[in-house]
Amino acid sequence: MKKAFTILALTLIFVLGIQLVKVKGQTYCNPMNLSYRFCLDQPSRREAADPTIAVYKDNYYLFASKSGGYWYSSDLLKWEFVTTPTLPLENYAPTAVVIGDWLYFFASQSNTIFRSNDPAHGKWEEYNNSFPLKITDPAIFADTDGRVYFYSGCSNNSPLEAVELDVDNKLNPKGKTVVCLSGNPLEHGWERPGDYNDKTVNPWIEGAWMNKYKGKYYLQYAGPGTEFKSYGDGVYVSDNPLGPFTYASNNPFSSKPAGFACGAGHGSTFADKYGNWWHIATMTISVKHDFERRLGLFPVGFDKDGELFSYNDFGDYPLIMPDHKYTDVSELNPGWALLSYNKKAEASSSIAAQPIAQAFDEDIRTYWSVKTGNKDEWLSVDLGSLCNINAVQINFAENKTQLLGRDGVLPHQYLVEYSTDKVKWQTVSDKTANTEDLTHQYEVMSVPLKARYVRVTNYRVPDGTFAISDLRVFGLGTGIKPTKVNSFNALRDSKDPRSISLSWTKQANTTGYNIRFGAQKDKLYRSYQVNKDTSVTINSLNKGQTYWFEIDAYGENGVTPGNAQSH
Image 1: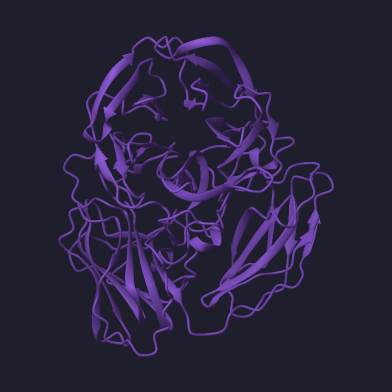
Image 2: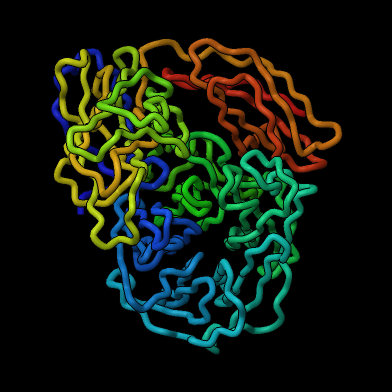
């Protein structure tokens, strides 16, 4: 199996004048490039969600809803798919935990606990087939003292609950079940449903997860609903795994409400082999079906005050996968800009309802499609000038597919080329004999190439027509960085302080603006990305809390930080 995320070797003709951006290590780009399965019911669409990653015997094991199996990896980049007849793989929200020498598996709506000491080969056994509690969005936490706890809940009117499990009695409940937390959208703006947190119905509070760090317990939870761009994860903190818990001021700690692929909710937080912390979470598409979803992997950390935070800035741009313990998350940023947004493009054909512009609009919910799935259909983008290209991400979409499940699904086969003049084309990536069913293909150059045009030509689609939600080109332009947003206007809603409206002056050389904000000037952990516009209303603030905001201008030549203001 070829690497899902790899650095490709290629021969360069136009070497002179290339501005080499040195990157130590391999990069990846969200959504994760996995073999997302077609669901078993109509409409035909792919899905994976509610992920857990557990580290067991030097491998990372990834479990996700409705995937018909699970994955494992030694480096978080290359993933091998495993299936087994033993596990209830059609159940939602599967989870796993290492206890002693075994990896244990739980899933929603199943009363059987499974375990394995050889999960790489799909070998599992029943451990307890009569677990007495209702299992809904389970999370299992093994404490450092050997005790184990069970967290569960998924409802728009009931709380998340927890109970200790008996390690000497088949992990059956031990003691009383306690209420941990409930939704509170009247105080927490981010818990209000809707893409823009503007609905008044009750939120879905779900997807518990627990971590321990320096003696503190971090109970995480998802809201307000998996189909919304605002889907994120909050956290409560306690000195005890069963609480009482205190709401964190930087909530939601994981949030990605804007950009190409949105959502960063119902996930799991784990430490890698080097001691770096990560959060794998659900990203939403929710067009063909509310549960049409993908996965995203985000760096997280604990600051000097013990606050859990996630690095979601430009969370669908390339990031470096570290092979050591890094000291600052900025080490993971390769410094590449998006070069393809809203650019002039051409195609062999188009369907009226899916025009070419939708392949360059930075919105995974829209897509371009040709009229057929025939070989030699193509899509080409004009970057406007010669640019230094570091990576290309091809996000395939499903249009007029009828496929269900994994059996018999043929992978995409395609060719990626570049040109300086649209006459002579050179190969970036030849996947005309590809055997991997991967839908967010990410191609990285070993050395930046200089080009103006990028073209993708179809050789085969799994089914339906040749369709791309976005063809994204990353690198650096050869122009000037954006000018600085020195100041901006901010108006906190006096009747509803969960909302604030921001406006600023358009800056030169910009693609858009990244608003960073938080409860303290040096803790701007949350972000909201805005393309083109110079105003936005954010409805996800917490009542009774002062916020600091900073607006950074970004473009094809880099990012220019702004000035922080409190409101």
